[in-house]
Each structure stands twice: as structure tokens, then as C-alpha cells.
Image (tube, rainbow, N blue to C red; front, side, top):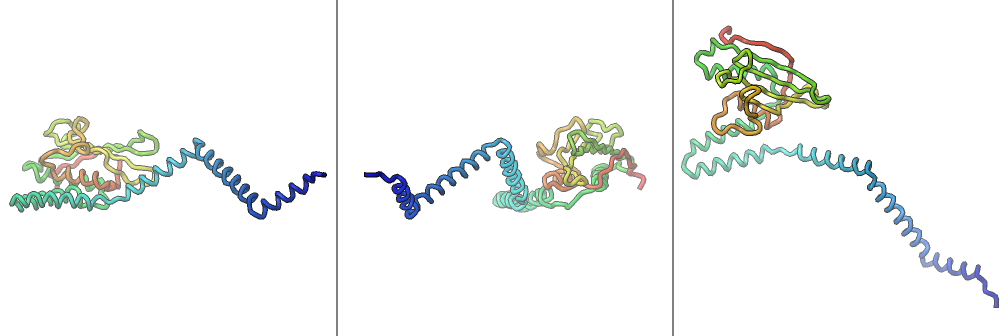
Length: 240
């Protein structure tokens, strides 16, 4: 008896083709190869790094789009309701107005000139002898960290921007980014120049003056500060 190996092989192949066994084997092999290739690619450090950066960017941008003003407004309303329950509606309205002014009423932009004018108005409204006073300001731009520009904007009643409470000195720290180089954002507000606490880190419990409210509002709403120019100047309030 002769064993026909070729015939056996042909019959087996024919049978496997008919029941799609070969096709399934090929598909399984291809699938396994593809999955391994993808897995190896994702395991590669460069690919993982790209994916991580992409995910961080997408998440960050999504969070940045959240508008917290509605949530803040809800808190303000709740504060008012609590106080109203204590039968003091006048106080409730005063507090709601104060917090609205501080957090909600957002400006589209603020200029260097507007900051100076706001400081002058604050001095005039809080000093009987304002006409004898002089406003000094110093705006310094510097590239300390890469492509970003950092700004120290000092404004004071003292020509040397002293640290005394009576000097009414403020230092505003701002920076920009390469996407919008002409728009700066406040990152620090120091109420005694180089020596005071940063109001953005801890809002003063109690009274905030009108100038501080403007700056705090700009900080929390990320209001762009525009038209910044490096200069040292002064203005005698009694001259006009």
C-alpha cells in the first residue's frame, strides 16, 4: 500500500479552506502581530511622552474653559440668604455688592494709565491733603525666565518706594506668554512694595481699599493688563 502524502495534504488544506480554519488562523496571527506592534509603540518612551503631553494639554484647556463666575455668584447668594435669615437685609445686600465688585464684575482689559488713575483716585478719596501729594511709579520689564517677560509695576507716594505704611506703596508683579505677548496678567500684589504680603495669596480680612479691589478683581478674573511701557514718572496731584 502506497501512502500518498501529497493527497493527504491537499485534502486537509481543502477542508481547512472550506471551514475557514486557515482564514481564522491568518486573521488571529495578523491581529496578534498588530496588537503587539501597537503595544510596543505605546511602550516606547517617546510615544508615551507625546500621549501624556497631549492628554495634559487637552485636560488643562478643558479646565481653563470652565466659567466659575456662576459658581461664585451662587456662593454670594447663599451668603446673602444666611444673613437675611438673621433679619439683616441691609447687611446682606452690602456683602453681596462687595463680593460682586470684588469677583464678578470683570473688565475686558486694564491699561497702565488706568491703574495709575485708580491709585490717584484712591489717594484723593482717602486723604484730605491729597493736593500736596505726588504719585510716583516705576514700570520695569525684564526677561528673567525664558521667553516670558516679567514686569514689576511699583506705585507709591514715596519717591524711593519705601516700605512704610504711610508711604502707600504697592508692587504689582505681572507676566505674559508667547501666544499673547502684549497681554500681561497679575501674579502678585504686594501692599508694602518689596516688603509686604502678597494679597493674591491671602486676601486681607477686613477692609480692602478701592485700588486693591481693582487689582484683586483683575487677578481672579485673569483680566489682561495692556499698554505696559517701561518708565519712571511722577505726578503732582495738586497740579490739576
